[in-house]
Image (cartoon, rainbow, N blue to C red; front, side, top):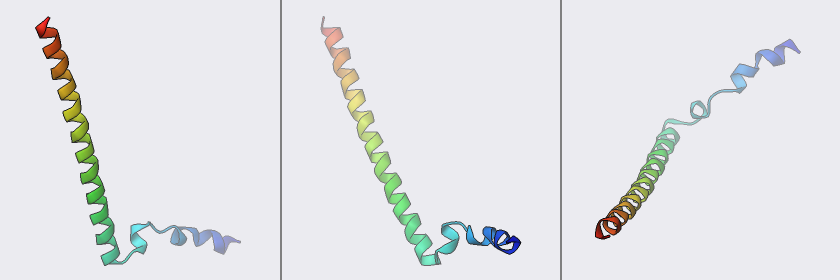
Length: 63
C-alpha cells in the first residue's frame, strides 16, 4: 500500500511534460492563435464601445 502512494508524483506529471517537443510547439502555436483571436474580439468590442460613446456625445452636443 505504501508503494502505490509513493508512485503518485510520477503519475501526476504535467500535461506538457508528457508531450513530445513537436506536440508542445503545436500546443503553443494553437494557444497563440487563440490569444490573437481573443485580442481581436476585444478590439472589436472596444471599437464598438467608442463608436457608441461618440454617437452619444454628438447627440448631446446637437441639443
